[in-house]
Image (tube, rainbow, N blue to C red):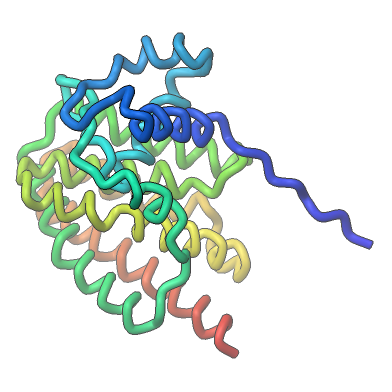
Length: 241
């Protein structure tokens, strides 16, 4: 009889929940600036990378905003919706998935093109950290790398310098993380490509942005989204069989 694996919470998830609880209890108010990553890591006695991952997860559902060079700020929120946002259904309908990728093509190709023109060294460092997070996940760190994936795409939106585009991507990010998780499960199931291939696609986007190659960045992003949509489509067909 196969033994069912007991899942344990990652440290970053525990940190995220602690910060959420502080917000729910009113210890941190909308508009407040959170303590630095260093201070939070000392407060919770965890690594700085765990704190960064927790903050990225909170930004992904629009609870906080991370401003480059300024810090992390708590957004206006409805406390009753926080749990609902963090636990919404993972799977989308085929039509919704199709529409999501249409939106992603419109937003993210443009974001990559603008990021190649406007990115800063700080943005590049954030992208490198996200790529490293995805690489560690592919080496068996305990997740499938979707959180690093979200960080990578949100940083590109930030690097575009267009605040409206960044806000739109931020509001999509919870759904993005779920589709990225599903993509990786499907990718591994069909064994059509290794996780390194997925990382390579992100590396191509990164190199184009790093080298100010705006057209190449948009093309690399487009290829990546087409590949991901194809993988998810195959997975949904299999699920519905």
